[in-house]
Amino acid sequence: MLAVFEQVRRLDRFRRARRIAAYVGSKGELDPMPLLHLAFAQGKQCYLPVLHPFLAGRLWFTAWTPDTPMQRNRFGIPEPVCDAARIIRPQWLDLVITPLLGFDAQCHRLGMGGGYYDRTFAMKRFTKGRHRPWLLGIAHEVQRCERIQTAPWDVRPDAVITPSKMYTRDDAS
Image (cartoon, rainbow, N blue to C red; front, side):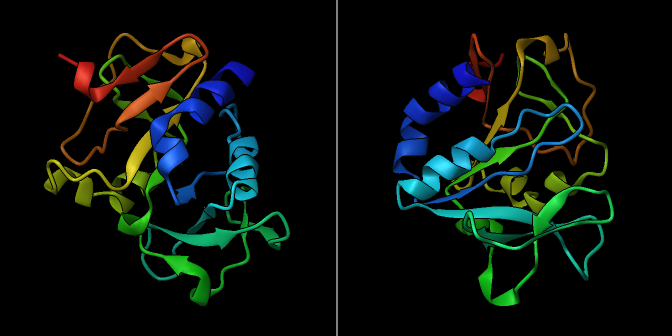
């Protein structure tokens, strides 16, 4: 994780971002919380996802600090206690570190199968050239698959960082 942490920390996108979202790692995912703690220490606004209370299969992002009260959602994943006054629209985030279980060299992502990130960031499919939010997956190199089967509604991360390499959509053929 330290090599991934160092690569992300040095990214221009991380350094320039004012509003960063991540997730609490579970079930074999790399845990980006050390990056969120660093971002907070640097004065950035930090956010974590919560399951949307009204729209099934979507996420809200709520402000997070190290003192934010947390609770487990219906999947057993810790999330901030939701406060509507602390919600940010996904398109207002600068950088979102997304969970993944697998990925390929073209930055297609395999998640837990619920489609939460695909639905939440669907606007990325329709806004070519739009740079916000920039979606970043973090993974171990062994999580790279030869090819991920995709669907029309899938939203790819803009990049995936492993301890040894950064894969970008721009490099994809």
